[in-house]
Structure formats: C-alpha cells, structure tokens
Length: 420
Length: 137
Image 1 (cartoon, rainbow over the protein chains, first blue to last red):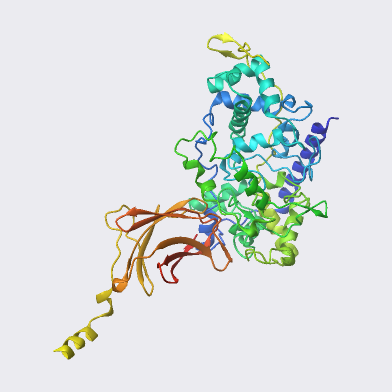
Image 2: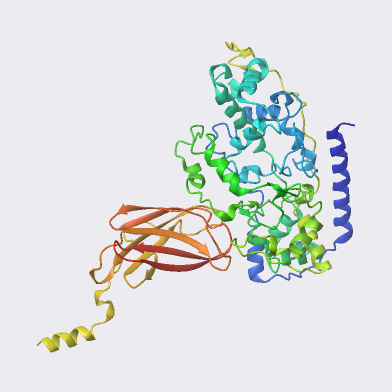
C-alpha cells in the first residue's frame, strides 16, 4: 500500500469516527427554544455567511483564469518539479485530509519543522504559511518548491522542465499569452507559483451544520435553529463567551488571520538549541524576499494589494507567534498547533483549559488564561467544533487528467525555440 | 476702564480663545471631537464602518488653542488596553492640505475595545496625546 493510500484509508476511518461521534453524542433541541441573548446572536451571525464572497487576486493576473487553474492542478501533483522527481505539493497536501496530511510533521527530502497547514479556503487568507513569510498565495506556492527540505528545486530546473514538456509549455502559453521559452527562469518559476495559486483558490469548504444553524438564526427560523444539537449549542456559547475563543477565531473563517503566542513550545524536537521563531522570522523572510508584494512580480499596478506589507510593524513579541488557524473543517486537519504536537481536538481544548501561562511571552498580549473547563464543557466545545466540518472529507484528487491535448493558437503543443 | 475690560474678559467663556477644527468639505461622517490642553482635534474613519481584519484610514484636522504654534508632527496609533497589545500595522500620516491629515494603514484584528491615540508634538515641547475609545463588534 502506498503512503498516500495508507493516509487515505486512515482518513476514512477518522471521518467515520467523527460521523459516529456526532450521531451518537448529539441531540436535537426542542422546537422553538433559542437560548442565546441578543448579543450572542449578533456574535454568532458574525461567523457567516458562508461561503464568503471572493474576487480574483489583483496581484496575480491569472487568478480565476480557468487555464491557470488547470495548469496549476497538473503542476501541483507533478513530482518532476522536484529535483529528485520524488515529491510534489500533493505529497503533503492530500485532498482526503482536507489538503493536509494527517501526520505531525511530514517529510520531503528531509523532515520539516512544522505541521502541514491545510490549503482549504486559502484564497481568503491575508498572510500565508504558519509564520506569514509570504504575503500572496502565489509567492507562498513557490517557497516549498525551492525549500531544500521539500521539493529542493530551483528556478532553472522548474523552467527547463516546463519548457521541455510540450504539453505544459503549451498550457503555460495559453495561460499567460507568452511561451515559457521567452521568459527567464525566475519569471517562469513565478508563473508556476501563480498558476498553482489559481488552482488552490478553487479549494473551498462546503456548508456545515453550523452554517445551517446560523442562517436559521439570521432569518428568525426558530424551528430550523432548534435542530442544532444541544451539546454543540452549549459549546458555541462557550466559544463566544467564557472561552473567549472568538476573540482570535473571528468571522466566517473563524480566524483573524493574524499571529499569536498560545503557549506551545518554540523548541523543535524539544531541543532548546533549535528554536522556531515563528512570526518574527516570518517577517524577516517576507521583507527580504524579492517575491513579496512590494516587488516587481506583483501584477497589481495600483499596489493596493500591498497595503498590509507596506504597513507591517515588526515587534519583539512576534517571536514564537503563529497564525491563527481557520477552524472550518478543523476535524479533518489534525494533528494540531504549529508543531503538530496535539493529536486531537480534545487535546487542543485541554491545552487551553489547562494553559500554562508561564509559557507565554512576559511582554506579550494578555488575552489567554486557563479556561478551567469541566469535562462536559470541554466535550461541548469539541461538539461545537465538529459542526464546523463538512459532512464528508474532501474527495480524492490526484494526478489523473482526462483533458484533451493542449492547443494554442490553433496548433497542437510544440516547444517554442527552447535552447537549453 | 482697564478694570472693566479685565472683568469682561474674566466673564467670557473659556472657549472664546478656543478653535474649532473641521472636516467640512470632505466626504464622510462629521467626525468625533477631542481636545487636550493645547489642541482640539476632529477625526473620522474611512470607511465610516470599521470591519475586523480590514485596513482603513483616518482623516483628521486639528487646531492649536490660544494662538499656540501648530504641532511639528502628528502621529496616529491604536491599541487594545485590556489586551495589552496594539495594532500589527504602523500608520503613515500625511498632510492632505487645508490643515487636514490622513493616516493610512490602520487595521483592527480583534473585536473588543480599541483606543485611538493621536499624538501631536510641538516643536519645542512634550507630546500631547488625545485618545478616543470605540468597541468593535
């Protein structure tokens, strides 16, 4: 059994277990009963509607382009982008695992330092990667390609591969209106990042039981709202109330898209000499990258898309901060936290319930304190989180295409004047 | 005669020497007035309704009371006092003419009480802070 199939099989088991947990652990409310105050309803409504409106990324001229989506999907699963031709983006971002991998930390050419984040709903993010080292989805898509621990590739390898493969070269020209043979290596690498971003922008989670409940509240449909399970309802009350979770897990995404220290160890493998600086290091990488939105590859002539980067303010307290994850489909994205050290949502809730404040920055923000939840409250909170899941994990996606051969300008794919 | 004049001056309301900054002529809400020992200030946000996680701008105008000199610099910031943190973004304040200023780059990333901080610094004096609170839902 391949690694991928093992992961897929394990995913089915996890999804089944979650479904059983939901079915067995929840009960519908009595019709007509709504226990939330006006302020609570207002807060609940702020977590929708879903899906959120979206418009193409102005920094990426092929965002939303169907040719780009097609080419991006092909390259996403193409192991030949890696120098050893053994790893693709799809190695760690597996559809059935909500576009992550189900393991604590994965391995490309070497073991990486962090848990693989999901790609779901990525089009709504402000910063990319757990440390926000990229300010666009296309620049983030380039980073694993050249990271020595992941695809370990480089611009020359990627550009030569795309130019030499007649079909890919044709699709590239169809997307950008220019042959990769007429662009330098770096420009082709950026082009690859942009089509991969276009593909990832199509990955959006579906409606959830929570969304149904929220919409029932919004239209004042008490009977429909009463179908939301009691334990999830109690958990939601904790989430927006004593748990203070919605302070950072805001809005329809259940994430404010910013960075926080939540008391998870900064040491990699528990080694005090190997420290993950989180957002602090992410900002350094971002600002030194020629591929950020202040650089020449931003297609947005107005530079309005770069406002976040222009005004970014580094702070000492950024050390050890990591991006607030979206909670949509969180039931399918374990293990959790930046290091993947917590295996289940129960463990995550326990982490916040028994929070060790000594592990927080002394000069950092004062938001978190141990929630000291009872066993039932913890279970309710988990029950609520499970209602943020789609009914099923995303279906399999991989390297199988039924598309006809690429034709550009009425001609079948040919390699255009490429001389290595 | 001098005594009479002095008496009139003493009876006059304190704001007789005050100034009133205005954002008239500019689009948007009328603005919120603030004052400190030396300055009166009016500001508004653009857009008027602030959304969590969305960048916005602040437009402001001020005047110095009692013919005091204009401030040498204007700074705009914001923080959440109860949370003990500020914004993750720094503002850039530019003069847009007619005594008006525009601060770009603000972004509130959490619900709760935020406090605007307007710092006006005289050329030869300590800074003066004017603050205004708002609760973001």
